[in-house]
Length: 236
Image (cartoon, rainbow, N blue to C red; front, top):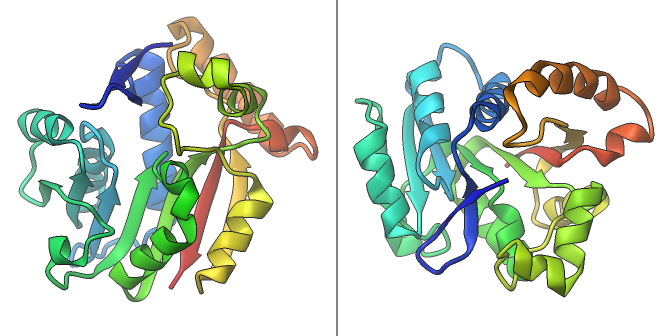
């Protein structure tokens, strides 16, 4: 499986493939299912938007005003040139710096594999994110699941971390860790589910069987904890 590296040389985004595109669309659909429909006046901030596909899918599917933010300027430039919509804009922004947002607030703050990059100061980061939410705002995130064998391998051992070109501070979550961190940061209606068995970059003929098998595994006690990701939602 190949990745796209950021301007510091770390792997951040899965390289394009049919499986990766299907995975992205399914993850976006899950986010949309936790948003209020028919509310184009609402605003969405995606932090760590990378090259912009998820923000584009959100903007295309909802009509909501979407801001894709990332600290990697080459990613933002690529997003601006590739994905354009009237209700979508991309900015080089650091969500932890209040001045970057000029007192903006959002109905949703979302992300796909971004919170685990903030593991060493997650509590502070969750607090910053909560401040960016409107009073009835919600967070929606996909994060790597430490109980997944592949995730456990690449995040737990220095040799594999180096091979995967992980950032020094990033670390996958357990379900209980994510729940505890969100509770301590003051979030309500916290839901953390183990989901998704579709592996990025697998051959096209394996996509449909993987989705079908994954749907069964997600509903199977014990086995569902081995899913690739944690799907996290919580309210302000």
